[in-house]
Image (tube, rainbow, N blue to C red; front, top):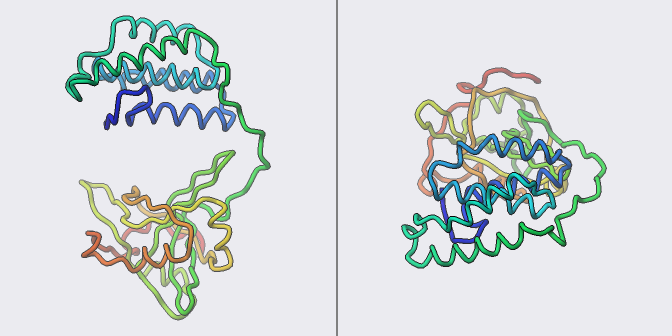
Length: 268
């Protein structure tokens, strides 16, 4: 876990806690459920004195920010603060302990009173449907060529839809078919027994919508289990092209025939 500084939200763990609580709260998830799920994570996060302090203070601050800090968590954190910042902060920086204590003192003052300006839930938005589904195979029309991609991951939430799109390493003059996709290759690497895709264009719903005239579903597949090794934000056709044509000497990866990793063709 990376610790960037001494503020309450200044480490990977703290950001994970804060972002999850705030975003799910804005999405309308029941606060009682959010609390329960994060309290269930205590053993996973509290691996030593330092991480215990980070976990509880981030949890309290996040709930205070949305106006839903309860007495149990508040008293737990006040007890931790009363004992002083963990001596382990000295291992990060010789001045960290004193500065961290100031951050803890400020948090103590905050959580002993109601947040005067808690984060508000946004107004419910009209439900949007995703343009594509997980596993959809898509042709991409460039100026004089076609590429082939598929939806490698899809996140649908009340306030956002995000698409991860993995590109096959092929360009052709004719409009592609599902057979062209199956017979093409894709960038990957193997980590132990895990298959990791080394190609990814990550689009939000709005940006992908602008490109719909250039995209066409040509089938749907289910691949053998995989994970995403590259998370690259994208907003244009050029990102597709770059993903297809990236050279391995610039980004080390291997290629594998897609026919070797397909579990099932769901639509043809």
